[in-house]
Amino acid sequence: MSGPPTHGITQLLQAWGNGDEQALEKLTPLVYEELHRAAHHYMARQAPDHTLQTTAPVNEVYLRLVDAREVTWQNRAHFLAVCAKLMRRILIDFARSRGAWKRGGEAQAVDFDEDLIVSQEPRADLLALDDALNHLGGLDPRKSQVVELRFFGGLTVDETAEVLKVSPDTVLRDWRLAKDWLVRELSREPQ
Image 1 (cartoon, rainbow, N blue to C red):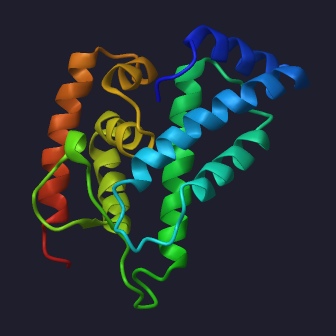
Image 2 (image 1 turned 45 degrees about the horizontal axis):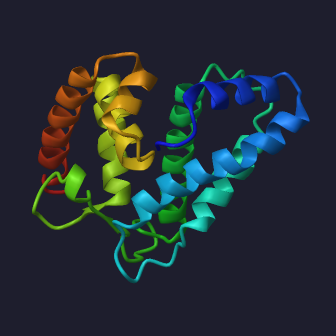
Image 3 (image 1 turned 135 degrees about the vertical axis):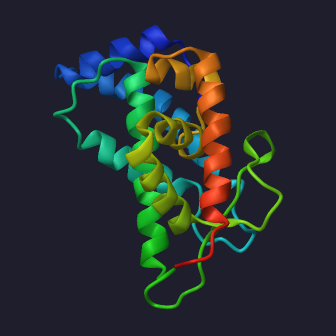
């Protein structure tokens, strides 16, 4: 999610949080652009017959953000973290609504793109990935956040480091270990 200068977005977020409606008008195109980039990054990895269009999760995240008036935006990094979490929830909700497990519907497949490749094995189911991330979050919350920010939020290593307030080397190390753990977890037989 590279885009406008961090300082400008942070100022607009804080002004909006303080009730400045003009700040929201200035922020909207910047926010929408960043959200669209993240959604496009995620949706590009989907199966060709995937029915969800890029604009659908973007619009849903945007609507949820606009309704989040009680959030005290700290900075752009905080905004990116919230967007990644919302994107994950929206995509998981969509997968569940399609009946991926309970109603016998076909599971929605996801994989990591070339930059984020975890395995050459068949695609991991989105709901299985979410379950695995929740499990990882119980063991190591930061590694789970790294995956959420990079995979669902489309953040770079540097942006992820900014959000988590750690070094880029720590993000790379966590990313590598989380990917290895997820490959192992997702390749297990269902119990």
